[in-house]
Length: 157
Image 1: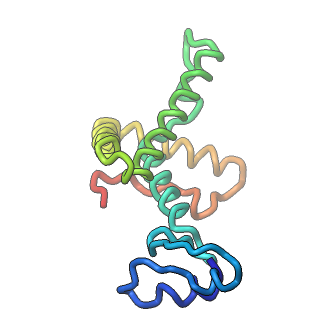
Image 2 (image 1 turned 135 degrees about the vertical axis):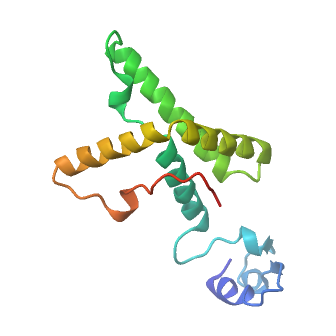
Image 3 (image 1 turned 60 degrees about the vertical axis):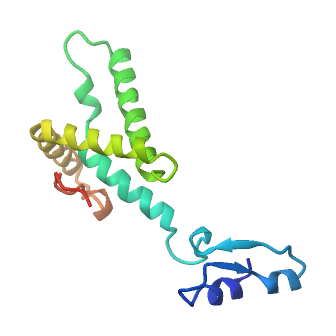
């Protein structure tokens, strides 16, 4: 789609589908697309913003450090494997929440499971957040604003 079409086509709110005639005039093919399928040419990508928002929310609940998987009687290999499994689980939850339109039941189940985990492990989550904050500040590096996690909340919007 050409810049002019993108800038002017979706200004009226009532336009749902657009066929770009200028693109055809320039030698392109006729293509129909919808407003919600259009990716803005400038500024942040809404899909990326959505994923970051969901990732931030999931990581504020399933916040576990690699040290949490080591302990007496646990080999380094087993601890590393358990931590990698935890990271894979977190990525799966993020994917389900970001792509909830594809499978709404799985997204709702992941959200309910996350709320249940948060309510039962609230003290562990707060302790892990404190340990992580202490660890990050011990290096003398202040975290960037997007790296700080909000206080866990039992209410999701």
